Every structure is written in structure tokens, then in C-alpha cells.
Image (tube, rainbow, N blue to C red):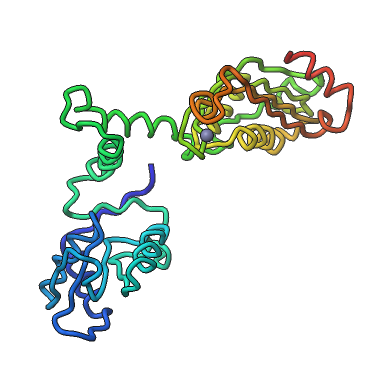
Length: 293
Ligand code: ZN
């Protein structure tokens, strides 16, 4: 998972004082509205610096939040109320917080702060989060997502170990068939799954077949679109093995398409990526397609 930054109470005190100093005070007392939920503790902490808290953004002099992530919340509130917007931390301008998972002292731990995500989702879809069957769901959800996205923390170099011994004279096509693919689409976070066929023609270097399976898994365990998954596998093999060429063919079923929207049940999406001689030589391409049919 992302790198975690835990803020101490001392750090919060310092930052709140800093924030209070940054705010241009044009009336007294200044009325603060805290954006739910993260901005609310910040609004109350500002009381120690002479601010008053209001529940109504329309009456507030300023709006505060705990952090600016994408900037969308800020845009939304500025657009609606036209009030000055402040945040304790700004991921857009403060480089040290970019891509980090921030944990505030009022969140017990990074797991607890992340568990808010599935809990909010369950509430949003109308579930009763106190129901017995859902008790462990937030924990399980996070654990599963850590596994489904663990490929972000692996690099092709970690997976591909190249052999040079004994491969000098081998220049036939090597095909690894029906490699299972389990991935998630980046547009809906919905599963897509199927099989990959990966082939290459070596140029002095070969790689263990299980490494190719692991390479597919590494890229699948990220948020993906099938087209990018296919070309990432081909490029990683082409770059580390420097073979004569690579061919990758992936067929997947996408739950976001099949179970909703256009509902094309059972329809497979096929994508391919060809590099080197697989691209340049018709007979190589045809042999590949014949072998993986
Ligand atoms: Zn999708």
C-alpha cells in the first residue's frame, strides 16, 4: 500500500496555528465551516485561535478541510459558496504529502482510517453496517484490495530472471498458454478475468516459464484497462529479454460490461500486442495465432 504518514498531536497543533496565521481575518469573530468529515476537527481546533464554528457553509466566512487531495472538494465548495477555502495539508502544493496516505491523530491507525472507505460505501448503498454479516467486511475488503493491487509494488526486473546458459542455439517460438488473468478495470474497479497467451522467439536469452506467469500476474494486480495490460506484458518481455520478438494475446470477460450497462453476457474482449518479428514477419505472426487458437 501507499507510504503512510502519521501526524502527531504536536504536528497538528503546529499546523493549525500556521493555518490560523495564514487566514486573512476580515471580521471578528470569523465563522468557520468544516467540510465533513475531515474538516470538522480542524474547524473546532481553530476555536483556540479565536474562530467560531458554524454548521452552515452559507453563513461561514471561510471553509476548512483537513487536506486537499485532487482539489475537487475545494472546487465544489468554492463553486457553491464562493468562500475562501483553506486546508491543513495540500497534496497539490506540498510535495512531501503527494501519493502518501495521511493518518490524523483522531484516526486510531492507518487500517482504521482506511476502513472508513468501505464503511462509507456500505452506508452509501443503504446497508445496515451493524448487521452481523458485515462486521468483518471492512477489514476483509482492505485485505483483499491490498492483494488485488500488490502488483504496484513489484517491478518486471524483480520477476524476470534471465538465463543465458544453454539458450545460444534455441531460436524457436516459446509459447506459454492459458495463463490465468485476474484484474480490475480502472473505470469501475470491477473484476475482469480470462487468459493470456504469451510467446517469444529468444535471441540468446530465455526466461523461466513460471516467471512469465508471474509477470502477467504482476501487471494484472493493478488497476488496468485490458489494452494496457497486454502491451505492458509485451514491452516488459521485449525490454528485459531483448528477444527477436514477442506476442501477447489476452481474452477477458469484464463484469462492468456483462452485469450492467450494455449487458453483453459471455462476450469476450480480445487484445493483442506484437513486438519485433511477431510484428514484422507475417509467417511468425500466423504461427503465433495458430498456436494460441
Ligand atoms: Zn469497467
